[in-house]
Length: 147
Image 1 (cartoon, rainbow, N blue to C red):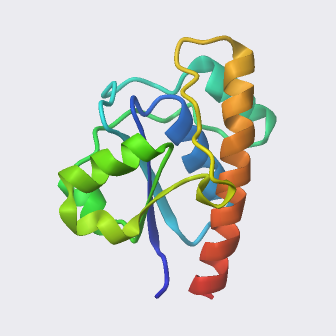
Image 2: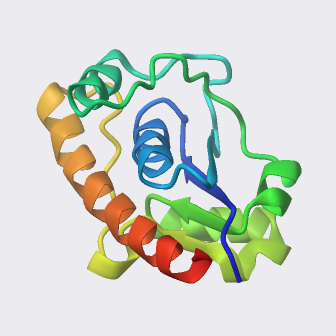
């Protein structure tokens, strides 16, 4: 089954999921990658530190605006990537039909991505290192099954 739509989820949709969305969109130009939050700060831009770190990697997320996860986004997604086990349970509890397509971004490294919200730059750098690893592993797998 080809994966054409990926949804990346975190809590506020201003730190982790926009960074993951940007990286995955860059790695998978033929895949629609969206992001949303379980408790989104709707309409807010990506965190300035996240924007700065991504810009240094050649990926712009400064146009991002946070949105709340919803039924339509989950139905359209072929794959839903979350940041930790708790978020996985939350998505699966809200959207029972999605149970087989919800995984952690760092599933293959058996890691959760800690939330850097309102933390210092080093917390964003640590989170982004995990996000880069997870996004890269998923992009490789998606490319293999979609080609």
